[in-house]
Amino acid sequence: MAESWAERVKGMRAGVGLNQHRFAGLLGFTVTSVNRWENGVAVPSGLSVLVLDLLSCVLPLHPRRVLLDALRRAGGEPAALVRVLVWLELHPSIPQPPGPPPSESQPPL
Image (cartoon, rainbow, N blue to C red; front, side, top):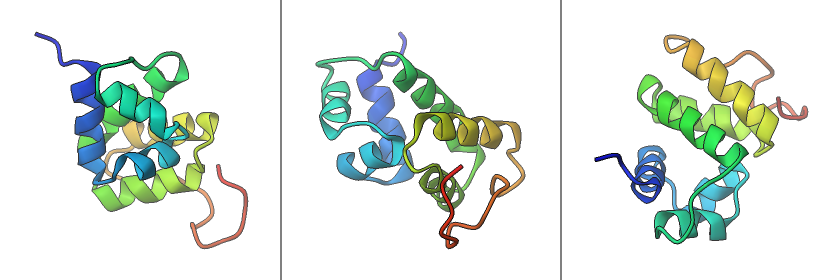
């Protein structure tokens, strides 16, 4: 039997070690959406599905710290999130996507 979206979202959130609020903020989702997905009241759609699918592919490829740093640099902006997640999926042995270090005050990817 296929894993439900509720189980998948809970598992991904547990994989990055964040509460619903921080997980939602990091990925540009609302807390309400994450809560509804995790409780099986709703399922992700549109770009949310793409981001979550990419995240599920990337989770096993990188240490938690590397993944969180890269996602923070994307700033919750959908196109930047997709770019970062695709880059991480294609480069599992390289720790961070190219770009300015997180400490610089430049716009996110």
